[in-house]
Amino acid sequence: MDRILIVEDDSETAEAVAAEVRGLGLEPVIKTTLDEGIAASALDFRVIVLDRMLPGGDGVEAIARMRAGGARGLILVLSALGRAANRVEGLEKGADDYLPKPFEPEELRARLRALLRRGTMQVLDNDLLAFGDLEIRLKARTVHVKRGHVAVSPKEFELLTYFARNAGQVVTRMQLLENVWKLHFDPGTNVVDVHVGRLRRKLEEAGSQAIQTARGEGYVFAPLAGAVI
Image (cartoon, rainbow, N blue to C red; front, top):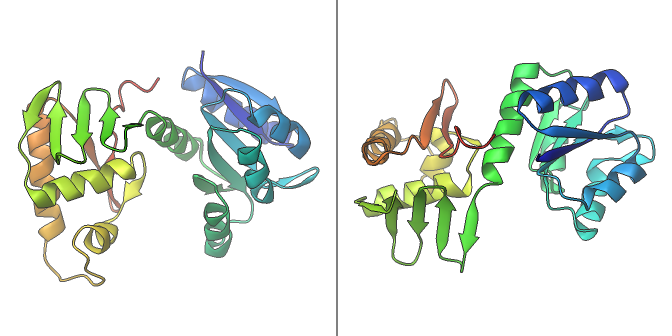
């Protein structure tokens, strides 16, 4: 059974996180101090849920030590410090996601699912991005689903590649405008929605439900949503 490491000194919070982990069909392993968490992080965990304020120090400041010690799991920081500046600091210091306390169980579960999906991406020879039956060839600029070729335009390929590199995360329309269209302003058109809709239809016709809508936020690329757990 795949495992998730929970580094949390508050027993009630730790058990709440563990309950969500079990609900995903995974095994929770709880550590209550920073030193214990750092030592355990080098073991085989898909995700590490890390409290920020722990006996022994700041969890965010310890992320570099975890990585240096061999930690390979994606890291979700939980913290009562939930201001935007705190979240930015956590992400810049190596966290893969940052969830303020108190949190809703449904949101925690969604964040864990997103990280688990991100962890399934394979990059081979700096050329292939593979998500189960969906494959993206970077050098050839081709897309395949279940070994069948999916014809995409150059812009659709750039769009899909950006989605793939941000798998499991909500991507906003503004992010797509900036990173795919290189526009740092909203042109007031539906260019993003039109291209995403066209790309999504092509993938769905080939058998992949990879692109999902996050209502009011943007889109999520989750090609293995039904196969993560």
